[in-house]
Image (cartoon, rainbow, N blue to C red; front, side, top):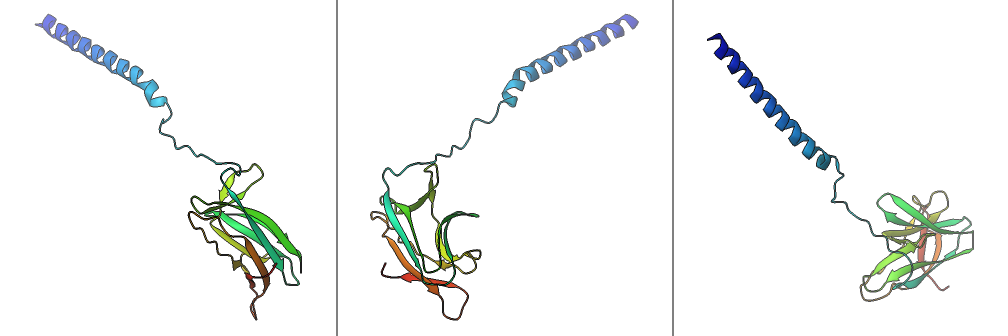
Length: 167
């Protein structure tokens, strides 16, 4: 009777070790696949250059005694400077239009196309709080028209007012 119990325990031990070896083998087989990086990555394609784009002249005449800065919002929390105009001076720059879609871009130093979400001019150092919003047409099938504005004081306020004007 004692022998039978010992054999039974050995049989159970044998079964335990067999299952443990199987479990370890499964883990070792699956471990490399769990350690691999995810294969479903989003790829951001950045278009560069002016191919397929049309230049949009951006001309501002500053009719104030203070310098004026113009900028573009190109992402939710990021803006890029277009340039500044000295008091009674001018700013000339270029934006770019994709007539097929109506998109308007600002190009950086490496010619990355940065989509313009909003455009404004305001007094240097406080261009956001004194800004004058500049509307864009954004019509698919037509290039963006040239932007020719005269920026002056907005009556009794501290804001800047940019209006179409003869350049």
